[in-house]
Image 1: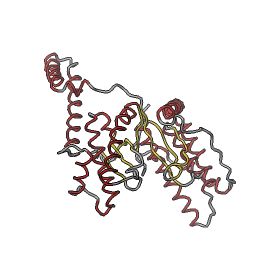
Image 2: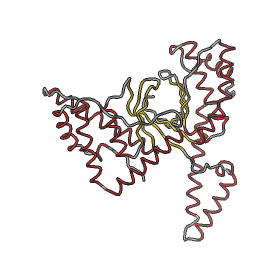
Image 3: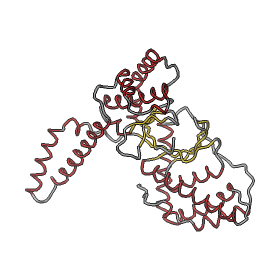
Length: 348
């Protein structure tokens, strides 16, 4: 999934139920019009796009449809049109391959055939969503100003807030309550998960509060997956990538100097030393992170993992190389964890 941050939760589950009927109609149309019998895509994911103006994508490499998390909170008709737009790309890919991809006249015909509304454009939808965000931000500022100690300023702000509320009552009054949801991202992906990848993931979990799980038998192999809030999984993704790169660089440097380094043993030496830095930094924060990690574990199991996995502790059976272990310890002592975290800050 190219380290795409995905979301699971109550609203997402409701939307998936609504999409089932749309998907069934899509399958029937694809079969009748183009004799497409194979699935157009493997799965649908609701994700956090790095490019904020993106609403959807048909990922040809993973063969999945990605939809922006923001669409979950829009009218279902909007989400349906974006989904069908991406499904039309899947049809185009199935029938014509990558060479014919794009918003061609033929693609527009596919859109019309499967029910994309005439005149629908994702760019217009995005502009509408941006305007809604601005309205909500404006409303929040006016409500704050209505508490001003200066009576005239407060009354003017309250009057403007009431006018804005009347003009946009549907938008503002349908604000979702704090929902039960969790974000997930794959930190490492491979045919098998080496001990060092899982051990590093365990450390990142302790540092950021994410719940780390080894998931076997995914579409592209096994993965080390992190679950938490958006801020937490972003921090975990950054920290894991930064440390992984630093470890690889140091091991390559030592090997160039003639040392025989075993990666599993090197990381086994480095992680306990890095963990000591966490423990010595702030005991209160350490306890808070443990609590956050437990909450993320419980939420992940409730929202994403029910009935799918058997939870067991992983134990490395690889033979330890004492020389690599020792050098790993020295590396771990010298790592600046706060620097590796970059600009990400944990939120309790």
